[in-house]
Length: 348
Image (tube, rainbow, N blue to C red; front, top):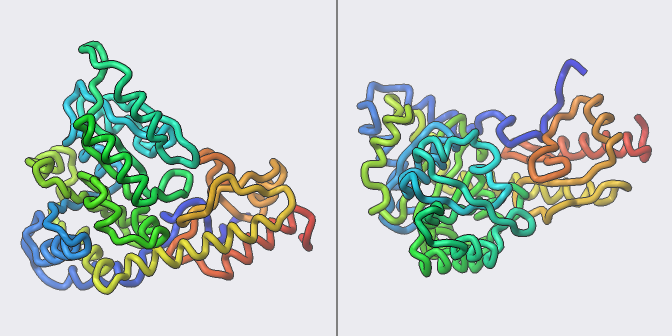
């Protein structure tokens, strides 16, 4: 088919939400100081402090790769290691950027069901060796929501953070879909981060409806020393910073970020429920955030592709179907209807 339908390949395929778009237009109206010295950047930073109810340091970068890589580099020396899940984005989808920006910090991977780190596996890696020939563990990195669409509960985060504290490690959270995790868990942002022991959060905006821009939020402010220099050196210090920050202010104001995340999560649950009714389809992971992971017979994939649908099959296993702020009930019905037709349950 030449015209593609509404896509479930990623929440990135959706356009910019109205609130973020209007904020960029508003920021475009006047001449303002550059490099973050503008009122929009200050407002967004203060709104983050209000959201997390603590005096955190906030930096804005263009994308998640930069956010994660620079944050991890700030926590490590080149001879250190970062422990992450074997499906974590920093391990599988950053093209070696964490190692590059940290001048060689090694990623050590641990297992765990449904994309979550297994506490005992992490401790096994931390305590495996302490000699000078082994990269010294320094950070535990967890993905929230995970690459399998699941969500760490507050007690799970706290347990990992307590382990980190016991062995004098830092805790980094890749929150590309942090909004969806908060919406799913029903816990407060502070309970899921600094109160549980997280040192730094990379809070994703792009997957929540923004055009571009992620926030690196340091709850342990001692660790953010000279982070602005890292941003500059990596080409992540925006001269027109207001266009990264103003949409954040619009998203954080009045809970827009959470409404969009709740909407995406609700549509994912609806999709997951409908898929389970189709013979031959099996959900691979619990549907806890905005993603649905399903195992389909091989013939189904080709049938859906012929009908114009696109999605990833290499992320998390099976077919990954992502919902966004813009996904509708009609979109869900169209996809499910075509899948039923492919499965021989309906008319082609």
